[in-house]
Length: 352
Ligand code: NAI
Ligand code: MG
Image (tube, rainbow, N blue to C red; front, top):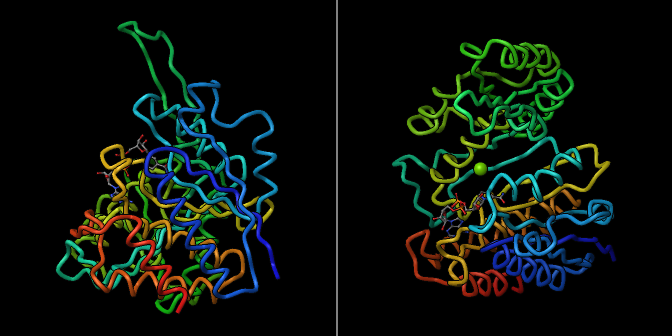
């Protein structure tokens, strides 16, 4: 029997609700299938904790998290704390501290879910987001604060190592899929330094993958391809900022932000990887019991795959898809079901 150490970091708002649901589903899955179990450590690092202690992650916190086989993360963000403080206080230190440079975001219209596109069933994408540098490298600064001559810079940083490893990761992923097609998203017409390096390194890496078909699209143009010709895309590699935006679009086109999962991977496995729904803490529905837990369940399936439990991941995906197909939907998908009802329905199917 394999026991995985799982670090649960539910964070704020509906993060707490969906991670609780996700842990219930994982528990049911391990009980039903046997062969593996989870030992869960809960980390209470939310915004209330920050307001009380002055930090999200306490001294030694990352070292503790590092012991885990995987991190199951909810969301961080509160109306009491500025977003740049919460994001840089909790989520980014984990992603950057554990070198989770490959952020993988699958998008697909699940059975029974309605895409706003008439041809939404053509959506079957994986967006690969560079997750360690680029526009979110954190370099820059502000001088003359508050004065009319105030200056702020936000410096995008692209390193050859950082760019090469994400392109290589994306090529490997594209190679593993039936379509073997990789789209490079760029903006090297307007941004003539970092984005040109991004393109050049892509072309170099491409030589090692002659079996993968490549296309190149500017980030503005690819939004129209996503909406008008979704079948033309398969795996998409984009920078930290570009992919952040494209993946929210992909989530909306697949039916709801409430179903979209993501994995922050450290592919070398020197550190634990982190799995989270794409959505945030959703102030508008917090505490109402109607958060869609499907994004978190799909996230749990990505985590199982990463841990080396592909059969469990498949079993879970089948249960998720049977529930979405049944029409038991939370309000974000046009239904009236609660988080608990969807969770119970998935668990019920897992036990069959
Ligand atoms: P959000 O994702 O929290 O919510 C956007 C909209 O989608 C809201 O109307 C919300 O109700 C809906 N929604 C999101 N997830 C849902 C779910 N599972 N079921 C049903 N409806 C769902 O994004 P927003 O409002 O921009 O941000 C709220 C807070 O969350 C902010 O503080 C923000 O910084 C933070 N945030 C954190 C993220 C993270 O921890 N990775 C990601 C995105 C936002
Ligand atoms: Mg985002």
